[in-house]
Length: 69
Image (cartoon, rainbow, N blue to C red; front, side):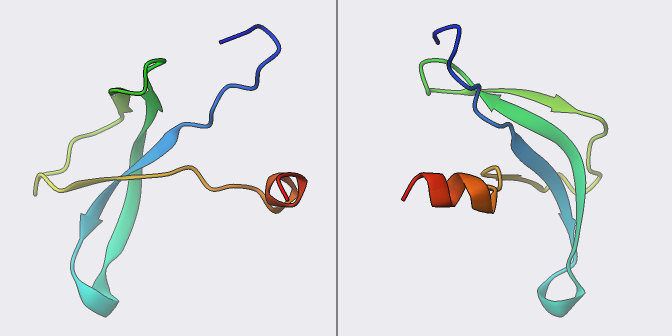
């Protein structure tokens, strides 16, 4: 990564409890993509008891989407 390049936003890590309309998502950490794109560094503030963790792509701000058009 060059010095002036913008670093990619981290992925959000959530614990998901329940299903359907009664699903609760709680953010528990973040994940950063390795430079080669073949893995992640993950930092968690807690571990879910149920063992279910979801990684989501970072949200793109509306300004960033318009600039990319």
